[in-house]
Image 1: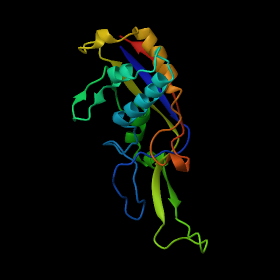
Image 2: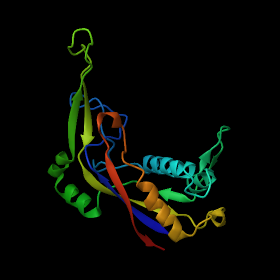
Image 3: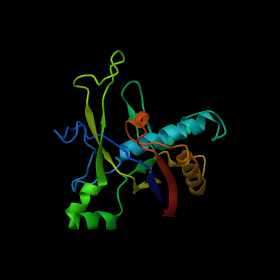
Image 4: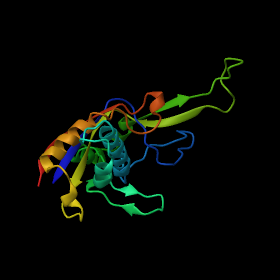
Length: 201
């Protein structure tokens, strides 16, 4: 069973690539092999797990247990042992048509990004601190899509306490708890809205 997550990035957003861009920017957005921005599946999976954890703690699953969260998303024990969850989440990317258009017309790529500059202010003088100017590359508002799949071949699939239709409803409800994605959210970046669409066997 597979669903599509439609992610509307409502403002500028940044997920770092761990790379610097020289004079252009101190921190670059993560990009695919075609130079296009995307949301890594591991990041999306993390915010989904957090949303489900909040739901579980609020009693959405009938009690306050997070056991169902571990079942769906897996867990990592303090001993370093890991357990794979029932849900798989792909990277969130632009539509195929958009990607193809940009690959065919590389000059369009520049319109997907901009930069934001910030600096630290000296509280005593009210002026910028020397050497504190930082420039951040950001991706502009856009819609991204990711696939989320239920692994029905998982050894613990039969432990799932709700059917696939109920899981789809839970996914839709929990995604409503996610309002921001990515880094520098304290600076107003990453506002988003996520919805679940369709189902395919």
